[in-house]
Image (tube, rainbow, N blue to C red; front, side, top):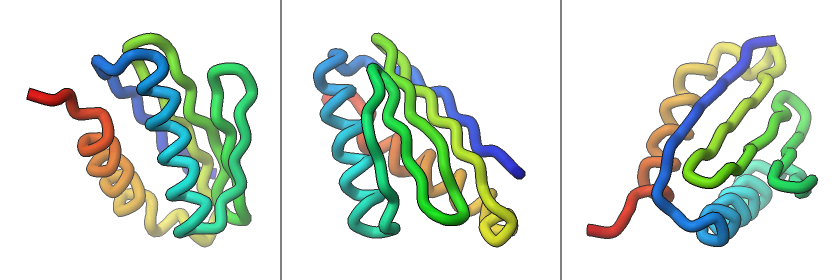
Length: 94
């Protein structure tokens, strides 16, 4: 299965990063019917065709997703969308 792996440094507090990950999970659930749950500092998500996790550490977010065969042709598009979404959510105020 193809993977999408993204590492992103951020300047959010750990609490802000948790809130951001919760927001991402709620958006995934609302728009794509993805189920998500927390285990420690990791948010696991899944639905038919995709599963993965978002790991939070101070100053860093790591996302790893495994795509099923039907989503394989959309890998580049999905990866670009994730990058754009993270860019807007993790930007630091100026």
